[in-house]
Every structure is written in C-alpha cells, then in structure tokens.
Length: 270
Length: 340
Image 1 (cartoon, rainbow over the protein chains, first blue to last red):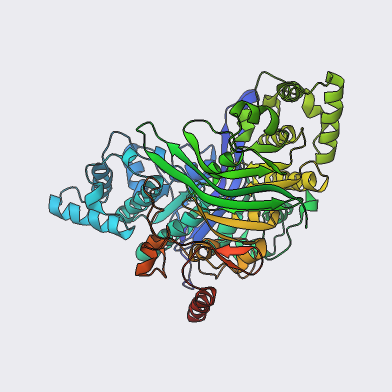
Image 2: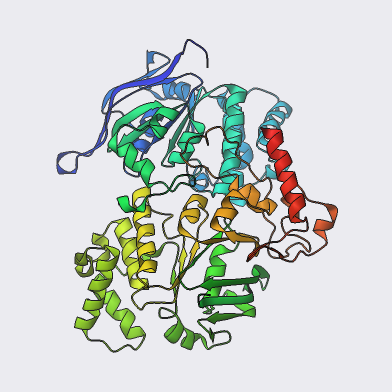
C-alpha cells in the first residue's frame, strides 16, 4: 500500500430509519467510516445488523436519512438520474443471489453490451464489442461463444456468479461492493470466486468492500474490518487487530462462536 | 468393541426422472457407525450427501429408487421392508432424520406439544397427554430448551429456537441413529453453536446412540464428528478420523477440499486457498474410470479407464485413488516445499 492513502469513500454520521411512529426502526445508527483507495474492506455482522442497509446506502439504492457520504473527498450528489448514472460508473456491486441479479428477459449479450455502453463504448463497431465481451468472459473462464444468444436461466449458479464478475471486468469501477458474494455457494467454489475477485482487483486496482457474516472470510481477504451490531459499528481496525485481538464484547463473542480447527472450540459459553 | 448401530453395505440408489433417465446419485456406499460415535459426511453441493441421508432411512419414494445393497440398524436388516412398515416401526424410533430446512416443517397452526403428541400417536404408542408432557419436559430440560416452548406456536419462536425444537421432536422417541442434514446452515453463528451443543448433549445423555452429520462446512464437521467421509459424485472417496481427514487428507479431492478451509485463526491469513477447477461429472452417465479424473491435478491417462476401488490403509481408513499412499504423500510434500 502507498504511504499516502487516498480517501475513496467515507461517511459521517450515516443513519437510516425505516418507517415512523411505532414502526420506526433504526437500521443504521450514526456510522462513520473511511475507506481508502485500493484497500480491501470487510463489513461483518450477523443478520439484522444493518450491513446490507449500509451497502444499499453506499450504492445510492435507498435514500439516506441523516449524514453524508463523500466520494473521493467530495460530497456525493445523486439528486437526479444523470448524476446517479455517473456515480454508478464508479461504484458497482455483486449480490448474494446471482439468480435474481439478471433481467430474465434479456440475453447474456445484452447484459454485457449494457456494460460496454455504460463505459462509453456504445459507438464502437460490433466486432470490437464482441472482442471486449469475449475478453471479459475468458477472464472468468467462460466461453463467450457458448453464452451468446442464451438467457440467464440457462446458466448454472456458478456460471452466473462468474458472469457477474465478467460484468465488473467490463465496467472497471473504482469501487466494488460484494454483498455476501459467497454465501450461496459451498466452501469449495468459494475459493474460485475469491480468486477471480482478487485477480480482478489486481487487474483494475479497485477498492473492494465485502459485506459478509463469515468472519473467517473477512479475516482471510481484508486489510481492514468493520464489525456491525444493531446498526452501529462496534469495532474497526486492521484485520489482524480486530480478529486476533478483539476488544468489543460483541466481536469476542462472534469469534468465539465460529468453529475453529487449530484452537479448541469452546462449547460451554453459550 | 462398541456395538454397531448402523451398518450399510454397498448401498446404491438412483433417481428416475420423468423422462425415464437414471441419475446414479449414491453408488456403492458402505459405512458403519458404532454406538456413541458420530460420522460426518462432507462434499460439495450436488455430490449426493443429502440423497445418501435419505437413502439410509430405507424409506424410498419417487423419484428416489432403491437398486441394491443392505441397511442394518442395530442388527436388524431393513432392506426390502414394506415402506409403510418402515414408516411405522423404523423411522423415529430406530432412525431419525433432520432435513435441511427443518424449521419450516413445523405446522404453524399447532402448538409444539400437540406436534409431539402426534408423533406418539403416529407410532401407535399409547401414552396419556400427561405422560407425553412429562417426557417432553424432561427432554427440554436435558437439552436446555425452556419448557415454555411446548405451549407456543412455531411462529412465536426465533429461527434458532425453531431448529432446536425440531431436533427435540425428532429425538423424542430415542432413536438409535440420528441423521442431521445441514442442521445449522440457515442459522447465525451463535444459534449454530447452540444447536451443536445440544446435539452433543443428546449424545452424552444417551437420547441418541449415534449420529450422522452432513455439512459442507468443514471446520464445523471437524468439531462435531469422530470420523469424516468425503463424498464426490455419489461415491465415498475417502474415510478417515476427523483429525486425519482435515490435516492429512490423502485423496486429491479431499486435499483440495481441505485447502479451501477459512477460519479466523492466526497464520491462516497468508495461507493459499486451493480451488478445484471444473465441475463435477453429470451423474446421468458417470465416467467409467475415476469420477474425479477430469478435475484431478495428478490425473493419469489410466485414471479415466480403470474403475478404482477403495484402497484400505491402517485401521478403518480408506481412499479411492490408483496412486499409492506413499507416492501421494511425496507429491504433496514436494508441492508444500515448492510453495514455501
């Protein structure tokens, strides 16, 4: 990592409240964070801790109740559609469920063509576009010739997840937000997906944000880790610091509850 | 030697699809579980773990069909028994099964205690409501579930609580073998730990005599079971004690599988994860030779032709590969040195 870290995405006092009156739910509660360029960040929490809500706010998919998000030090402005499109060139996401991430009525080609258009390649000759698409597919070990003219439902789950990564390869965003990218697949395929993500990161030098409940994964991949509980960030720091020497009681409990293979897994503490 | 609770000899089952195609999901599986022991089954999605679990119960319903092999529970051969008889006399009392999304199996319109009463009724066990409640109370006590649960409707319980309730119901008739198929995969880590603790207590207190635990989460399997069998494309490719299977796997597939373990422990941050390229074979027409040959790093031309049997080594350990133990170990050692 360079000595001088450049701020990529940061937030101050970020809050999200759903509903009002008796239904009022505080999903994310005054969260502050600083994500630096080129860093790999994990946001870890159990279900209901507000990590996905935070992710949606970062992506601009839901409005922010209170607080500000800064992109490269400048206040984010997504007040109209055009500005939103501009913002999405910089930040992209991979979701948990690859099956629901595609439009069922669009062929694979058009999914990838959309990406090229978003990068301003809409006027390229078709041959050049095909070349780009084929390159992206071969990056994740898929063959474009086999995918062309197919619909998303004709692919297997693993293929779809890899195609998501191919999309990101075409889009080359500054930030990639991966929301539970490996929770739907088993441990063996997890390594493959992680491999591709890491390869992609090295290729286009982006900031990678993992949203996950898998603390082992967070420890393995990330430079810095944020632990969330009930909408608050209870602990943050470098991966070694947070996972190996947790200070917050919640983090300690979380790590204690994960089955281990080298240390004894203490069952008496539940 | 402890008594053998479940013995399976060369069990083969298949699915018949509606186009009349055969899918050979469980292929010549033999296993043995002794009293007080637990056996783990590991493997990636679609390798036949869950089908094996279903097949072990001896209760087949379409599209799953029995082909050959024997299942012996505590000295009693149940192969070829009438399905209705299996249901009445074997399921629940001899062998019990917790399916993957077990917590969704609770009837939302019945209180938990009334579901338990139904279990007794279905097995023709004459017990008064009071007696049933006494047994249920005791069961709850032992496994650390609050007794109030019995008078609640399933919707009033949290996910982890529902899962534990289902397990409590499945062991209420004191089965000899409990088959747990991913009992904790839908739960967060804390609830998962509670479920595991409960299963361990059930074993220690003699509610169940032995257990078969199925999951793809290897660190969990390592902590719960005594022995681990690794399954690939319907076959058992390796069987070893939990420790050997995780730290000293022999079969190239197990080796790859164990190399994908991620745990939050110091030192593992710099470990290199292994990923196995390719996809498992289609079980409609499984390859003639070794089923893993296609994806194997050490594959040789003869692997694709010769059907490999189980190669036994010290104790009850075996693996299914044509490469001798010594040669495999040397190869792994060389690779480890190379990476270091």
